[in-house]
Image 1 (cartoon, rainbow, N blue to C red):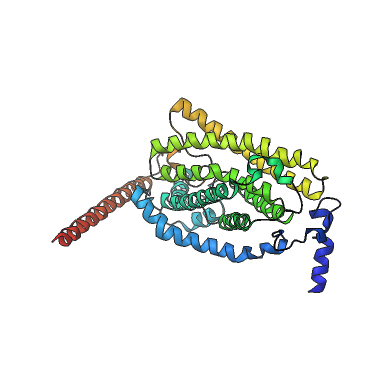
Image 2 (cartoon, one colour):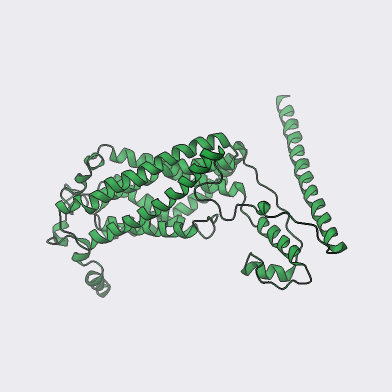
Length: 399
């Protein structure tokens, strides 16, 4: 144990990595009256909190999000799975697009149709997407309110130069410590759940964003960049909860309200990420901080992470501006800022054209059409039965 601690002190916790020149770990010790200095071992609660977040999300989605989706009228589209073709199924698991596949006695047109229906059958439901968005909405809203309440009376919230007064020996309040822990564990839980969540077209950017955010939060705490770190987190939360609320209403088909929220989100995002973030946060960490201490490794590493985030902000701002262009000229928002890669149905693809495939082809098409109608009729009958049962129960209850 002593050997491991010595290695950590020699390679990882070297003073020149974490403290400005002229400062030593001994200088950072504080009494109870002075407050608490952030230490790397404070992050030890990360693992149990991540598990708690995942468990809470499961409980929330099952007991709150799903019932709420029904109240708001979220509807799931029913897809008919294609008939079983073992050769195509084996190829589908490796590549969902029929680029090079043995025709298995089927025409290329029928193979494309099979793959299209197979992809549609695997698409996530609107209920699943609603549950994910509602969980993120609740967290971002709570985090934003918590951040504002904890920062509104601090001097560095109004004057960013105060982030560096007395640096690096700055005590950390308990509320800011827990604010850090909540944000860190939330993004860790998002990173762990990316493989099972709805995959979006900016999946790679999301991975980069989550990793950069986790490293940024962890490093800023260990290097005692807590003051500026709290500002970074509250700026991001200010627009994220609006985006998630807009997605929830989109899945519920509240089109007009969703369009209004998109305009609000776009304004908040563009102002906070392209104006406030670079002019206040990056400027104070890159320029104003040099008035209080000499640059060191932490200075360069922290600013590099902020520039990574700013690059992602510019990319997402481009997507938002494209959507604004479509909104102005078409009068509605199509999709969202980070569209679901697997949620866009293949119904927009070229419709099947009749071709001479023999009686098997036409028979299969007729069977598929009949199955589709039967599925729709079954759903309608089930809904009618449920309404009748509910009416009978209400009548008995009144009697």
